[in-house]
Length: 319
Image (cartoon, rainbow, N blue to C red; front, side, top):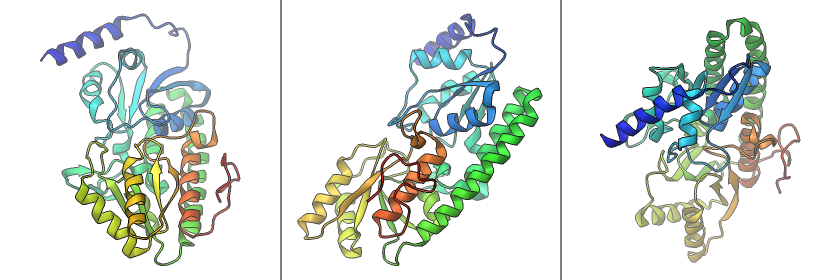
């Protein structure tokens, strides 16, 4: 009860605070994750000003709003969040905020039949839909529609930018099919820090294993680590992957366990799972983070991909 009263007070304070930019005709928007913020900014163009709450290396499964976040959320013209239980700690606050301002759970635009189940979480869905460009287009279109609702005068501009962006998604999907399709048989097993790559695996015919579950709140026990070490040794997996927003300790434990059994397994690189790269970088965009992931996975597991990715823009060449 005390926490609920606290949220109500902060919500009221945020709504009553004067907004310094209120004379600006642009929409002042807040996005929870970098992936959503990137698309909102691209589709909105110069008609929007976007603030993203969760930056590089931030885990949305565990993220809790700060007082600064609450002020930003309550002063925004609209809020874009993912939903599907990704930002679990924010759900209560965003639900309350939706009674005062437009709040869009854009991840939930993905049709029910296109969602994957969330493993042991009965009745819930895997939220990591951005790993498949073919599903992400539903989110892009939901953002376009929300912006058109907020700013009808910008509808044509939003539609044009969306069409251009969807063409880029199609090109990225074609690249994924090419480079992941080049993986040899027996090398199509992707082992990562947590189970964030299920949609990528389904879209491109990879077997995906996460040390932790769908949410990083679930911890991997010794039995889980031991079973995965056996898998790496038996399947002769050459490389496994750490993630930018998840601690490396479990991945390191697998490498050490395989080594103790006489099998060398390397860390094939760092993947972007729940957060993107540095702001202002190519990897700090949705298209760039996926390009990085696809290129890293393909090259580390024995496939063929350009060292600097689809457009030659990756910050570092992959060996």
